Length: 98
Length: 481
Image (cartoon, rainbow over all chains, first blue to last red; front, side, top):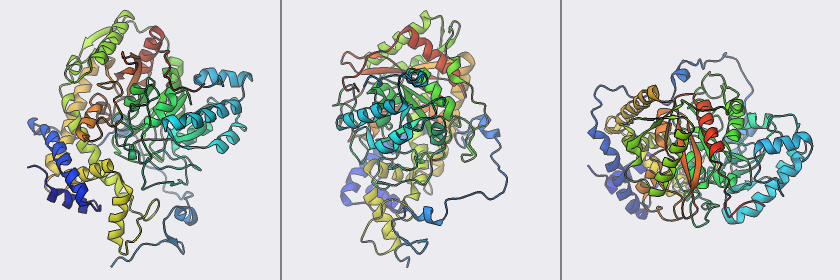
């Protein structure tokens, strides 16, 4: 089923992105093209194939990535807030939620 | 100055012997970056003060003492910006170094600047940068490739001997090929991704550009290895790559996937890569035909998995903790939406939406799970092929550098540029692009060597043998003095 402008609007909403009517007109056919292209995978029978879970090599999978549960230095409040668009009293300030 | 255009080994021996100083090398590199940036737009930030100060304090016994290096602007360097070529990060200054940067600095390297790239590394032409496209030093009306186009152009133009980029679907190898330099995408888990801004976490690797394989090897042995900050780095020893380059390659088995040399491949690129195959034959390598029956599906698989991972990774850009925030949004959700609408460019939006679509309820099995299954089939293809050969040779890019603007309105056509490179990211194997000549229009052509997991030493040895037999000594018209 080809992607329509309604689908694109819904997806933009799920992705927390506003989308202008002009963008909608450009994106809908482009995304429809790309989705139609990736649907060529349907030609393959994969009923018995295990999906990959990520990019790890066999050696990466057996690498123990646990560490000792001890404290270590972190950024600290001042540094963590230094790049915030609106920091106030040691917090990230955001517009009203409700 | 004459220092520009030299390799790491030439510069390092000059600095060690006292013939030149680290400071002079770095100053000359910075001056070239400043001068050529008007033409190339390869750098988004050039740190003249920081770099020259640091050069004055270098211990000349370090392995990369005084070597100027350029870093793609999606890898964090403390004290410099990390914009990812995006308006949503703008002049974000990260409070820490990526692990690969810490390791380069400990080895004495000097970061001279941050290089331009497609926004969040999404693109094959560099035209998706919010700060303007990079120009190819071989022909400034053409793209340098992408997404690490700034790093490729900086090395090709002799500004720096080496630069870092990131490779999620070919973003180091393809621009390396289009700019006539060597480019490596290592095995997944070879280099730490800590401090590399995530695009598609199961595909991303930090890669290296240089003018010779030897220089790539020298940098890889510094930056590679386990990092406790990145759980996907593997506990696999890091060899002295640069000391294992020479020696004959008689009897090496080179896989030739005939089916990939068909439709869609530019005739000059085909002839040039086939000539490289003949060079290998003359050097004593055995050419073995191999098949990768699922390679034809790799672009489809890639654009499902990469966009799915991107939609999740880029959810963090919400105008709260760092970067840009839209004004006039009195309510939180509205602020998220406006920030992301105004902060992201069209390609990033397209990919976030595609990724959201393929992961959304009702579509997950049809797209995402299906793609991960075909990814398994592709891995099996490579596994079988590497039982019969030590490495596989393919073109890196189906065409030489195309014109700026040529493919910008057709995302699918742009995606097909990555047809030879995405397989390595999906399978997690290393890939190395090596220059092998110029087209009639004097545009660089490269071939790609693919190997099994952790086979970087084999790829380096094969590439070095080719370089020795067929040195690529041409320089682009836009080049440092």
